[in-house]
Image (cartoon, rainbow, N blue to C red; front, side, top):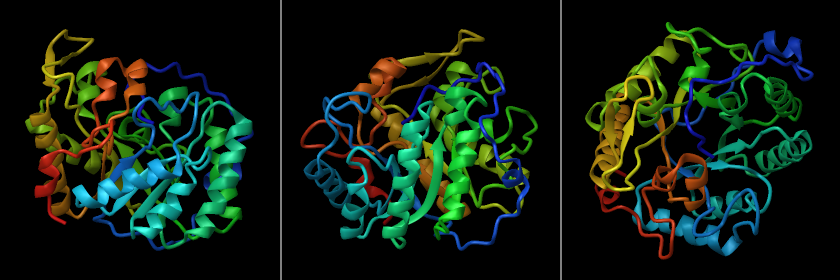
Length: 334
């Protein structure tokens, strides 16, 4: 799930069983999926569902949401956030609808749960080799935890390698983490472990937290996304790069974001600006033949507790029944 983008992390470097040999071992060539693929970030924790407690999304709900994507959007690719607690059904449901999947094996600070997720990730990768086109060991693990769980990321990558899954592997994080928190961009310790690079790029959160890029309004977001893509691509020559999350909130309407360093308001939450950011970025990335994922498919109300009110307004489709999608999606090329 998307967590607030922040550059002020406590960097306590702890190595939890990191396999140093895996860090330097060459990665065998693999066939990547369509480099121009455009996907939707998909999480079924809509309405009153919460991934931190309570019931898991039902199969019926997952079917309903995927049907809505097929009926009201041009997207035939999704990126998912977990492989346990009923989410593993998503892959069979996607296969039945001819939807491709970038599957994230969710990793956090519970090693036992991580182990369960890794096992399940291997199972679904083997079971759906044509539907699951890419894999990621975690999403924004460093953004949330600093370097404390690098060992868990490496353990996941090693397990997938030993299981001989066919899909290309990465660990998804913000562009800043993939630049090793440096400007100019520098490679991280995961450079030799992965097959591709998945970066999340959010001008909205830069506008709030960053002292490097203090103000990127909606009409400049597409150029910002491409610039960060290019920074990372130059840093990892020969590695395919994909923007694995980008987006803009559509509400609360009229809300602006204030930069913590300058106090300047830059960036307006509105349906109009969300449509502008999504449409302009998809068009630009399609021209450049770069893979991107729109964050996110459906509004998730539970995120308001993590990211203030704006956290509940990133979806291009409603998070309450009947889950209607924004009308601008109908005008996107299929």
